[in-house]
Image 1 (cartoon, helix red, strand yellow):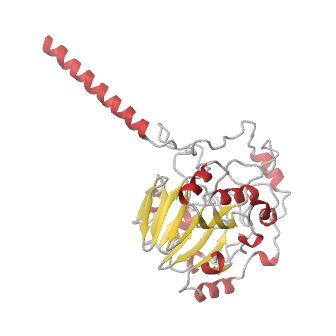
Image 2 (image 1 turned 90 degrees about the horizontal axis):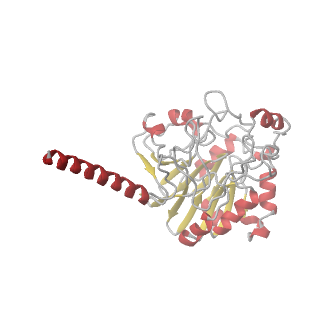
Image 3 (image 1 turned 45 degrees about the horizontal axis):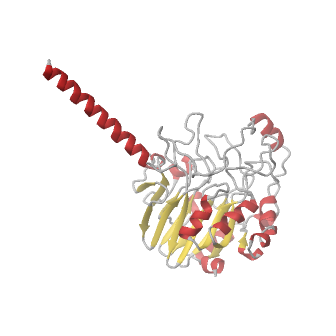
Length: 356
């Protein structure tokens, strides 16, 4: 009887010890890791207004009012794009393919960011359709050896682009729990990263940074995968490639720890959801042009390049308002107008011309 009691006591103490260790491990997890395995934004980030009432019906009714005609000089013709890519093949360069897709060549590494080459940005044939086609086809891109993905939204993560990607020996860097989209499609060199993780590739150091955003691809997976921006350190230069992000205090902290930044790529579109949202031109998950400049200033960025506009309708602001507001607000946010950079879709520029 005594032996049985001692055994039961031992089992109880063992269970208690395991529970304590589990709770201790949970306490040690970073703030953005929740106990249920999902993720949240950095501490102190803005919260969604409870008066925001999403409605597909209301959104589509307002969307029909948007004029999607673009001036001829909004996009560079394919021949010129291909010629420039060939001309600069031995130089460091930046090329905008549209939305959040860039080709960035740094030394021996050619990077592609959030590539989406399909006509529509959604599952199968659903989702918003581009009103501007990609300036080149997926099969026409130069050899890529580093694939950066910021998060899982359909306008950034395209399973069709991943499946058909011509350079599957590329190194792939993704936030936590997004590696499966690549490993099941023939990629083998895939690394999942948490915020502040660092990886060295050739002469680059890549750090995954926090962002004020979220993740979701279905009704059941909200925030089950992480999101994040990338800091790319190359020689004596620092380049910040922002995940879709709203404004938050985190950027002051990042500026103190990692600034100054030489060039920041940042979203300047997809911020107006009024009248569903209580405020016009305000989204906690997508900075408007003025907030984008604030973020760049907090990062101590010398120059800032606007993206995530002029390709597909995701919100209700006029499609070419973001670059106009971005340029017009530059001075009042501490930037010369020339340092608030806007590309044409398909534009290719040497890096030294951008940051010097």
